[in-house]
Image 1 (tube, rainbow, N blue to C red):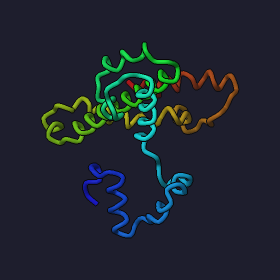
Image 2: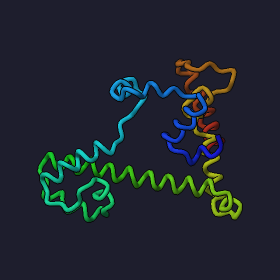
Image 3: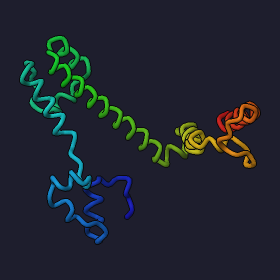
Image 4: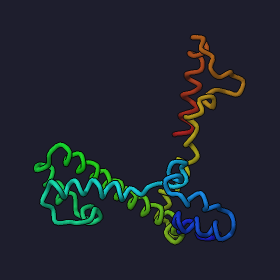
Length: 179
């Protein structure tokens, strides 16, 4: 199973099913699969329904939600002043969809640049690589407050004297890890 970073969820399902590693019979009844969490609706249908609200209320030229989302933000902005409450809500949901789309494109661009070994070798991503490694190394230590205390200390001691004594120690640990 090489190349999993480039495979779609449907493609992965096909590969796993072909190798006998996935039971696709749970997907035969779409409604039941949705109810049980084996299948998830596409956002596209939801976005198209919101777009249909726009088309009923506003004289827009686009016929598909993808066409609407491909417009630049300035072109979409003009319609807010003409929209009623329901249409404004649909516009806001579609703006969130546009934002989500742009965010996913940006994340994919960063991922592709990061994974491109030639750029790493040329030093183009060295600073980003070091930052990412530091973030990953420190990502969970603040979610585990017991790590801020020495191993002999008991976590959760609420006596005022212990709290005062441990505060400088915790600050020192944070400074070492972040700084």
